[in-house]
Image 1 (tube, rainbow, N blue to C red):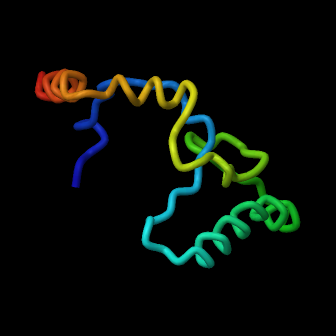
Image 2 (image 1 turned 135 degrees about the horizontal axis):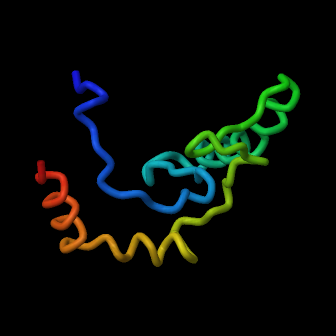
Length: 98
């Protein structure tokens, strides 16, 4: 078990806009459609129960993003494109520092 005092912040990033729906490629088309439909309506069920949807960092969401698409786009894609071997090596080196 890692104690809280043993943890340290290596880097901070911008918030992820909204959680998106990711599915295994091999799932049957019908299963994917059923999951998309369920997640597209989860905000309605939460509202009926007097709850809110929470995203990354506890951010309140209006609804789940089921139409994000198969490929990341926009600012997220640009940010993720910067994570190359050099970036990973720099993070590992920083983590190794006392």
